[in-house]
Image 1 (cartoon, rainbow, N blue to C red):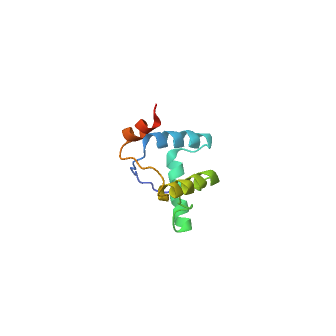
Image 2: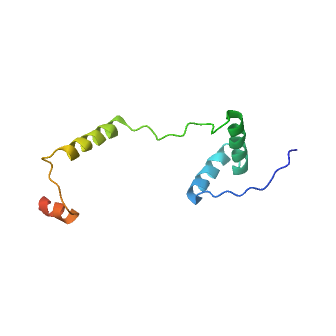
Length: 91
């Protein structure tokens, strides 16, 4: 049997809880999962998955583009405070 060494890592409480629950469903504990991950790091010579921002839905991309266009439009009314914008709404 391989010699093991105790290792301490810091994990956000909610992330750990969710991961432990999921891993238990797979028949693994957190230590097993970390060992699998580290073995894959060695085998892949790096992180064994792509680390990137998630892809945005098309409607989100379109909304972002629309917001950019609105912000560049010189006819768009500008406010110096939130209360000034609320006054303009006549609520």
